Length: 100
Image 1 (spheres, rainbow, N blue to C red):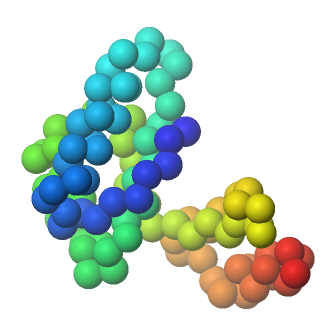
Image 2 (image 1 turned 90 degrees about the horizontal axis):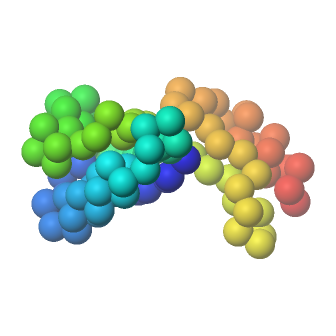
């Protein structure tokens, strides 16, 4: 899986990044292509219409997935938990207490 963080309203670097990742996907045999998980970093651009607009304008390959997610990383930078929306604060707090 490839995880990237994008702003659906971005019109400078995000489309360029999308094209690079699309090119990578096209070069990998279909059976081995990873999913591209795009995490929205703009709370004001979370409407589905913006994601569909990017899909059209950036010509995203089918492996792209958009999500609103939260990752919990430990002090060394390793992922310890992933919460995909919708999630509740109690679950996040539990993981944070375990890492403390």
